[in-house]
Length: 286
Image (cartoon, rainbow, N blue to C red; front, top):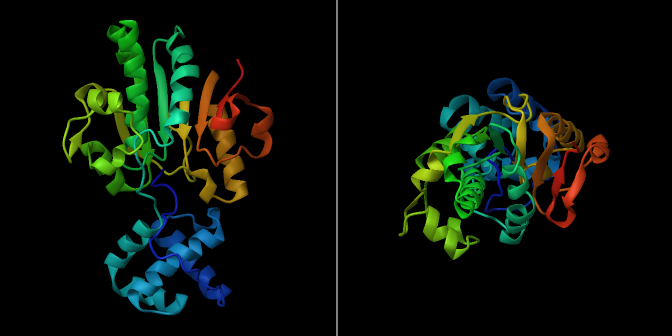
């Protein structure tokens, strides 16, 4: 799950919008002063996350909270942390990753392309990007073709700098491996409560800061784009726009990998076909 999307706070009581003008002014302030595009997110999610910060600072109105932001620069950091997601794990929903390993990785590996470009869009603290690298590395190792693994380039992007710093460190607690098969846990991560990513995976993965909603996709073209549990937090217009940009960034025959509860919306539905529909794996024809 991505740090590009709204975080699920521990306190979930909804905030009532009894001051639409105040809420609109706060959203405008966030956009103007921090470049965070509030209007692209679902309002109920946005209200819930902002409400966490109102309660934490002891204020009861959007106007009062804006005054807090004006007088306490650290509150900006806390607000943006509340608005971005930092919770994820390796191989989340393993059965879906198993489909990717069986139906997608071999076909991509068999391509004659000199480089295989893989993009983890909304990479959070790096678990998804390293998971993708591990599947390619395992496939190459099984075939005895590790001499060709350097052609796989995995890029993880996210809007949150702290999450990207954690991804670069590549050290994770045991909870991050709840969905990881024992074989992959032992092969690609050190033992112990602070597990480090294997050097083989580190060599395959890089990270950079990028805003999915404000910026075009990084230079590709891309053979595989993974964007899981990210777009569900965006409004429909933003989802449709993002799906089209993903499509355009894929090579012919490239694959889009979404979260289990995410659905393609808009014109892109006629532009890609399912590889495994139930697992939200789609391919651009070609």
